[in-house]
Amino acid sequence: MKPFRLKAVLGAGRVASRLTLFVVAASLVFGFGAPLYCTAQPITTEGGSGYFSTPIPLSYQGEAARKVQEKEPVLRRSLIIAAGSFPFSYFYTNLAFDLVRYAVSGFNSLYAPWPFRPIGSVSIDSKETFIRLGVGAGLSLAIGLADILSR
Image 1 (cartoon, helix red, strand yellow):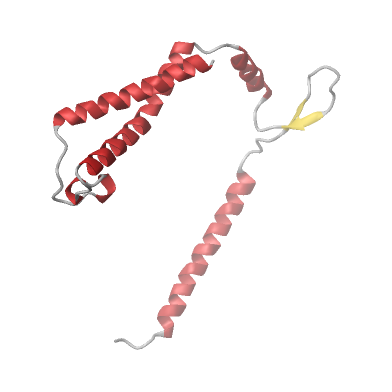
Image 2 (cartoon, helix red, strand yellow):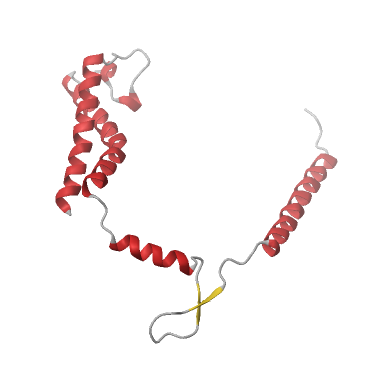
C-alpha cells in the first residue's frame, strides 16, 4: 500500500475550490446578464389601474383565454388519451397475464412474472403476444371511450 500523501489531498481540494469559484463566477455573469422577463405590465381591465408582474406577456394571455373558450373535438381528445394510455395498459396487461400464468402453473419458477423471471424461463409464443397486444389496445380504447362518456 502507498503511504498517505498530503499533497494529493491538498491538490484535490484546490481543484474543487477552483471549480466552485468558476461556478459562482458563471452564475453571477449569467444572473446579471440575463434579461428581465418579469417586468411590470399595465392592467387594462375594468376599473383596474396600476401594474402587475407576470412572466407571460399580455398578448399571450388573451390567446390562452380564447383557447379555453373553444371546445376541443371530442373524438380527437379521446384518441389522444387512448394512445397515451396504451403503454400503461399494455404494461399492466402483461403483468396480469404473467401473474395468472404463474398461478396456473402451480407457482413454478420457470413461469415467474417479468421482474422475477429466471434466464432459462418458458418463453411466450407469438399467439399469446398478439392476445396481450389486443387486450392492451382494447383497454386503452376503453379508457378513451370513458373520456367521451365523462364529458
